[in-house]
Length: 178
Image (cartoon, rainbow, N blue to C red; front, side, top):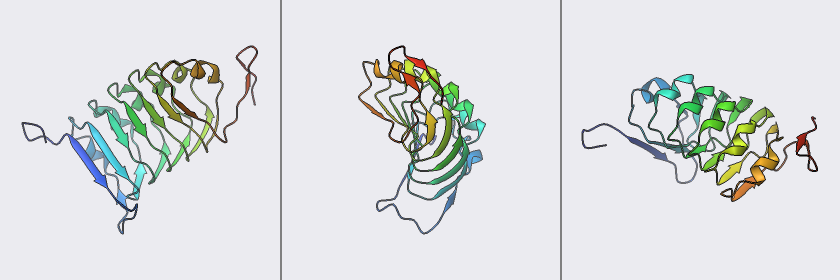
């Protein structure tokens, strides 16, 4: 809580990655916490989709919901979370393509969307995120035509693309399709 008694951080950590109760994520309750800065809930059997209303959580700097049962698409409104530094949605069942709005998250340092069911091309704008230090997109069905712009990022320390389709002519840097 902050000095005025508003909840600003929610952490639900399961030590052994086990929980006897599946939690249905109630985003309506979440968006009523406008000062929420951090949401972390790993391996707690969260179910549901991430709605467009996540944009109302404008103070969020960290979303870490690794190893849950979230489904549906990653909403484009996630791109309006300009304070976001860590977005970890790995090991869920997210589908569809990565919204191009993710490329507008200029302060994003960690993007982990690995082990989902994402498809389509990784948005080119992600390659120009200067703060990005770690990006994990492995074990999806996405393609990365922005690879060259990613590899030129001076701050990027880890780029994990295992099992992705790469359709780049390295001589020209052009997407050659797949």
